[in-house]
Image (cartoon, rainbow, N blue to C red):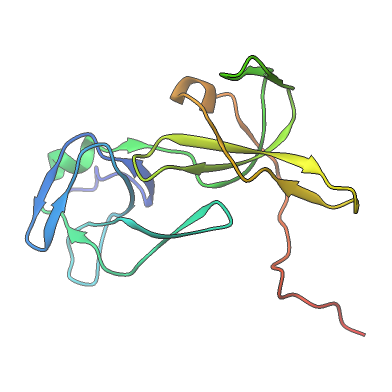
Length: 157
């Protein structure tokens, strides 16, 4: 394999890949690693969705086809973003520019945003149902530039 492989990250598969341990279908969300313990690149399908974020297992398909690797369509990382412009959504509503959203995907690598909402207890929560957005709309997202603590974190006394 050459150094022209895509970097590690999330991708949408453009074509099916016939792997020894099962096919990787076209139009699917995958995590791509340009190398593996065995040497060739590795693609891993999502396994579990927690808090609108996909987790990926350790096992995947070894890819020995450089052309197939080059066909992968890069996706933005899952996480927190701000809308770069007003976004009209299917039900006639408008999500305002700079709104905080959480970006995730369907298993078919379709982008979903979960808008943030202020709760009565003054905490932020993300709506339970995502809004599907196009690749073009996804390009308007700006990284939010912050992190949040894990719910298990406890302040020291």
